[in-house]
Length: 374
Image (tube, rainbow, N blue to C red; front, top):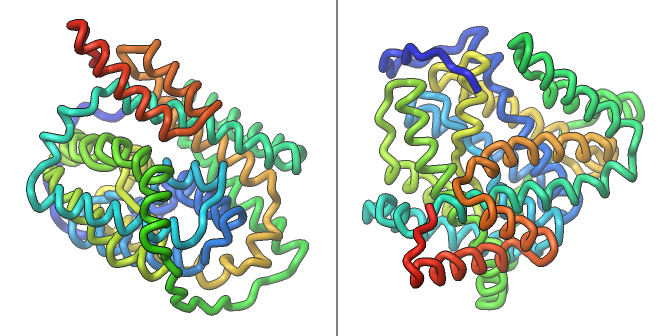
């Protein structure tokens, strides 16, 4: 992704203009397909999840004053979409991750953690999630090949336009709008969907143990690398802002501890989302405020089970391809392609947790023989 070499001067002002409005939906191509697909498969309360996401989008914009996104956690989302999970497991994973990152941030432990996990292992998690999402997208594509084909064609066209003509990539937005338009055409205008707090029932300690192994363990390295360390670095590159990595860890901890026990989905920040907001013109926290308002519209008008069920399945198939390719771009940036590739295949044929644990074991063995993995 090409950005101007001239850094944006540090500016803590807030504004809402045409550029901030255009940039507000830039990360929805990542956010919405994960949440909509998870809602279909895991039967989560999508309206409530979107409300929490909207609230934290606004809070994050007010706190940081630049467009730092709030996203559903991709590893957890991918695993739920591929294999399902109970509401209790989802809540337990959010609580566990919230406590972990709140403590890490307060103790200023991010730099120490960074040195424990080689980048190649993190790339393996990213590439493994790419393959899992592509496998899952195939299920939606085969169920609705026509809309999927149209959606994937739109993605390819905009990829080529962006690559050769520097045209901004509106493919995800076009697919989302097209899917909603088709739903409206078949069902008519949706009514107001009441959003009520639905506190999930957590089975202790079973849900904490199962979610810790299946959901939390694969997510933690991805959150450290992408949601915290890469986001902090990119904020300096794009906005000339020193966003402390431990502060990002604290906000991730707080948003999950406040939301997960009440039915929210595990959330984090993300360097890819920040880059997307910047590319479409976002320069202040006003981008976040507009994004929060739009997400509230989705929460109250497009989140009931009937509306989600009426959305074309091909929309999810195409958008999950979009998310997978975005993750894959980062996953292939590895200096140890054999290890990263092996982890990805292990994630595809076994599961993400086994792949992550296996990668760490391989790194430990190689280190015993004096071989350092970066």
